[in-house]
Figure (cartoon, rainbow, N blue to C red):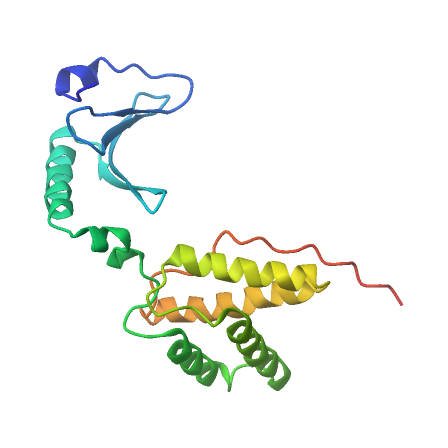
Amino acid sequence: MILTSSTLRALQPKHKRYVVTCDSNKGFAVKVSPTGNQTFYHRQRTMGKLKEKCLGNDFEMALAQYRAIADRVQKVTPKQLLTPAADMLFIGTTWVELTEKWLNHVSQELAPKTYQNYAHIIDDFNEHSGGFPRDCTVYQARSLLREFMIKKAKDGYPVQANRVKTCIGSCFQWAMKMDIVRDTPVYALPSWKEAPKARR
């Protein structure tokens, strides 16, 4: 379907929200809610992952935004499309630099034992996975971290797997506040069920 003012008026609400894509403008789509509300999006698949940018509820303004985005995409090289800057995890820093700054920041806040545990977790992760590469994406970082946590859990240490998540999650939460990373790889990772402690 070609999205125009007339075809949009003909779209009827359904029991569940549904998506209609535009045949003449690749990546331009509208989502129709059960109440009949229409929201426009630019949809693009990058490295197998569908990404959507909301363009609002006004058709003419959304179409203008879509065309501006499409013009920018056409000027990007294939290599840039493969790993766009917006997908990169680090902003002007590296994993080693980040952990050094973070550990220095929390050294006065954490109990000595907790600080030592966090430092050990980071060293253990670096030894096992080589740390996060400077040019890795959020998705790649999440995969590395998930693999390390699964290894810990399979070795019989679900508690350690959860501590890894807490430690690295805290590190990235701080880094996001400092604007040196774009996201946290901990998001959407599971927590392992720990065995109940024996009562005394």
